[in-house]
Length: 105
Image (tube, rainbow, N blue to C red; front, side):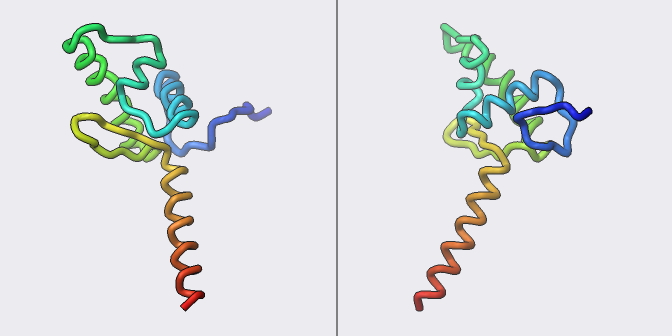
């Protein structure tokens, strides 16, 4: 019997920690690495601790981007990610909006 999951079918194999990060991103996107750290209860008090947490979670977010599960963009020094599914829906919406504009002309 197949395992029921709320996560979409993924082509890439994910570790348990990567899967937990991915499910959080699905729930509340777009997110930065520090927001992911806060979700897992890791809060840096000093600037150095926040930088260390940011580096740690950025590593995992970049792994998920390389596995083509998430899409990323740098905004300032922060890496912001969102699900690839959302990007696909945004693209479809953009195409449909262009079709509607052409139909009005």
